[in-house]
Amino acid sequence: MKPIRTFADLILVFGFALAALVVASVPAFSVTVARPIIGAIAVLFVPGYAFVAALFPQKETLKDGVRLGLSFGLSIVIVPLLEIGLNYTRWGIRLGPTLVLLVVFTLVCVIIATIRRHQLQSEQRFAVNWPVRHHSDGPGAALVGSTFDRTLSIALVIAIIASVAVASYALVIPKPSEHFTEFYLLGANGTLGNYTTDFKVGVPSPITVGITNHEARDVTYKLVVSANNSTQRSTVYSEQVTVPDGQQWEKQIDLVLSQPGNNVKLDFALYANAQTAEPYRDTHLWVNVTA
Image 1 (cartoon, rainbow, N blue to C red):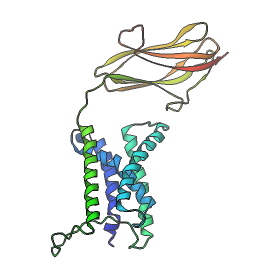
Image 2 (cartoon, rainbow, N blue to C red):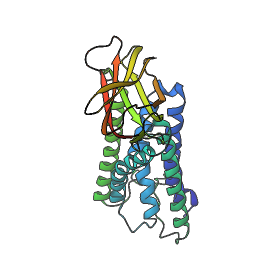
Image 3 (cartoon, rainbow, N blue to C red):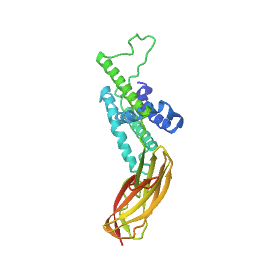
Image 4 (cartoon, one colour):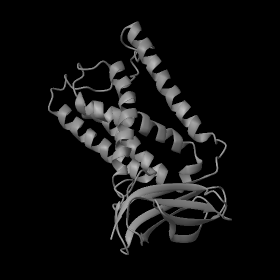
């Protein structure tokens, strides 16, 4: 068995992962159909196929239909797990880091699959039966095997094309845009969670506040942070910031509390443009303040 036939599928899936990273990084591809098509294949099929190839290098271990189905199913599981892992890094869940991690994951699986296949006898290795037609072949030479195998292969090809088409349609066809603002807090390590909950009177305690503007216009926000305990409510921080449409604003602010207390509620209120009675977005933390 020629090496190109043995490892061509691994080269191809890694190529799709790299291509997805390239088309997402180059602005010229953002208006072409290549981006959603390649992206859909890279997300819905590539990581699962590479993982299955690393686990099952022998051709007799899995039938082709099962291998293909597992590739789609595991991809749906793997990609969210990779993004959960990204959430605990300083990069967060973003398109660029997600695709980079997808490329790294695919490369590791491809390397493992290549090594494990190479250690097997050539007749034991899994390899895609790439149809090769010679001049001496008859009209049906490319379609070998039983009628059931041919029917199953055709059905699987149709299923793949349909899956890619549906995913591409969902990505290409613009949906009515919803105007909203993301308002969030980040802990000490720059991720969701791990917030500072133990404060000391008069000692600045940092916390990162983030705003992402999806309002289809530039918006001037007013951020107000207040401390609310059982006896009084006081403003501990206030700032006005203008965030252009589609842009993100993050800032680490230092909060200084003047009154001790247990279970003090820190209210983070965000007002859009003119201040109204009710905040546009809000969130809160419960903290303990010691003297």
